[in-house]
Amino acid sequence: MLLSRNLALLVTKERAIAFDRIANRFIESRLPIHDEFVVAKADKYLAVVITSGRALGLALGTKTFIDVRLRTGETFESLKSNAGVATTRTSERLLKFQAADSSWHELSF
Image (cartoon, rainbow, N blue to C red; front, side):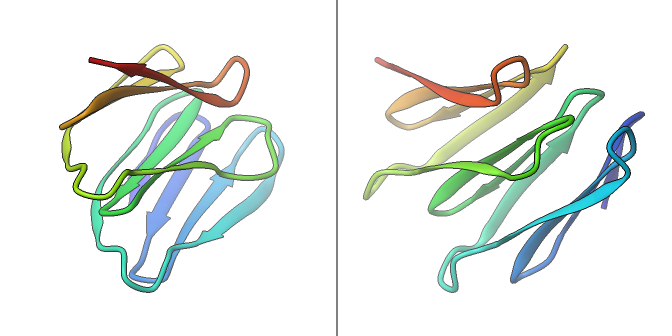
């Protein structure tokens, strides 16, 4: 379980569940059956969950997790979060989740 000023995040084998203090609501997303949990972070503006097959992002004030699939053979390397932007580095690209527009942005290298 992760706690921040505005978000609480709980990840189980089957779900990612967040509580948005500002909206006073729970938001949940089912995790794919064969995905394994890797890492999660929550800050003042967002929560991010990384599994072996996808990255899920939730922005404060939104109603759903937004996900992006990892490619076949793509592996997680790191996750950093600061001021409403979470950056995930994988073996193939950088994925940025921005709370301001509640979306993932991809940078290949």
